[in-house]
Image 1: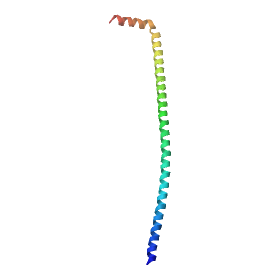
Image 2: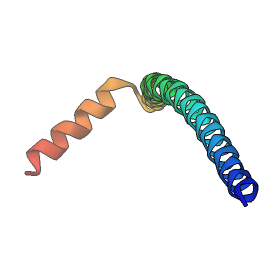
Image 3: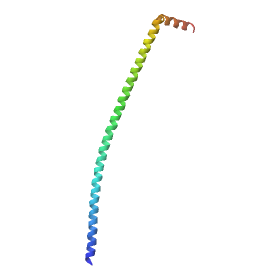
Image 4: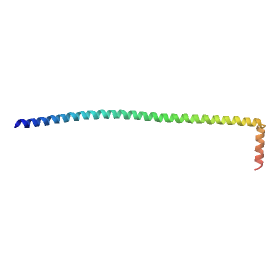
Amino acid sequence: MAIPVIGGIWNLARRVEDLFTDVGKLVQGLAAARSELRDLETRVSALEGREELLIEKAKGAASGAASAVAMQSIADMARRIGALEAGQGGQRRLESNWLVFESSR
């Protein structure tokens, strides 16, 4: 009669030992997952910083490109106006039109 009781206690002790082993493995797995999560957080923070820098550089490049396009358009318009003035008597014609406009006010 004592042998089945001792066998039951022995089985229970083995199950408890297995449970502690599994809990130990779980704790190690959680520590590894926590470490990987911290590494990922660090990488995401670095990527966010780079993203902000790229956005600022893109804004600067877009502003520079828009300015260059505007300046080119203004230069082209000035060239065309100059050509029109040259073909219609130059600056004197524009001044005389301005005087007519001013006197009609």
